[in-house]
View (cartoon, helix red, strand yellow):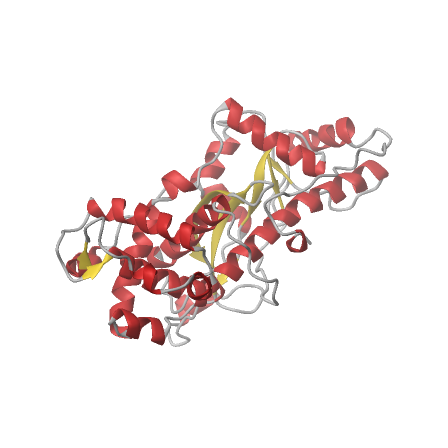
Length: 371
C-alpha cells in the first residue's frame, strides 16, 4: 500500500520543472566522493533514483516550472542521509531552508508510491520457494518467507499535548512511531506498512495489518514468518521457545536467533544510511502520513541501493529500536504450539553433522551487521 500525496502539496506542485532529457544534471557538479558524502549513495544509484522519480512525477505535476526534478531529489535524499538539510548544498542549488518542507514532503510521497515496484512480497510459487530456500540455507528452518519486526523510530511530540504525548511514549523511554517491516535473508525489504504511535505493540501491528491478515488467513500457503518475542506464536508466525527444556529446543532457538539477527542487521544498515530515521522530527497522532512516507521511502531506497551494490556505511553506535512486546495475557492456541513443535521435531531432533546447524552466508550484507 502507498499513501497518496497530501492535499496540501497541491499548492507546491508549481515548484517542479521537468527538464529536457539532454539537459545537464545537478549531479554533474559533484565528484563521486562528494555525492556519497552528501547522499550515502553512488552516482549510478542516484541517477537511477532520479530517473525513476522523474517518470512518476510526470504523471502528477505540470511542466515548465521553477525547479528541476534532480534538484528536488538532491534536497530530499540529502535530508534522508543526514537528518538535516546541508546548508552548503542548498546554497549551491539556489534554495533556502524554507523550500525544504514542501520539497521533502512531495518527493517522499512520490518515492513512497514506488514501493509497489521496489518493495515486493513473494507471491508466485517460484518466488516463495527461492526466499524460503535462502532462509533455510542460513538457519536450517524450512518454509520461511521472511523475518518480521516492528521497529521504533524516534519522534518529537509536544509535552503540552498530553493525550498525544502519552500514546507516543514507548516502553523504552522515548517518544516514537512504530512501523512493520518484513525482510529476507539477504536484507532485502519485502514489506513495509503502517505507522502507529510508539505505545502500539508488535502483536497489535501484526493483527491489524494487511499483510498480517493475508498471512494468517493462509493466502501464501503453509509458510512461516520468523518473529521475536513481541509476537504471539501462530500457525504462520514462528517465535522462539520461551523456556527451552531440551537440546532440540535450544538448537531451534539458536537457529531462530540467527535468522532474526538479520532483521536487526538490516534495520541497522537502513538507519545508518538514512539518519533521518534516527529522529523523524515533530509528530502528531492525527497526521502520521508524512512520517509513514519517509519510512517507506527509505525502505524503497534501501532496496535500490542493494541492487546497485552500494557500500554500507561503517557500523556506528546507533541503536535499533525494537517494538513494544505484547502483555502476555493472550493465550497461544495448542494448534499453534503443536505446529512449532512439529518443526522442532522434524528439523532439530536429529544429531548434528559437520555440515548442519544452519551454516550459511548473507552475501549482500556486511557480516559485522549480523549480531
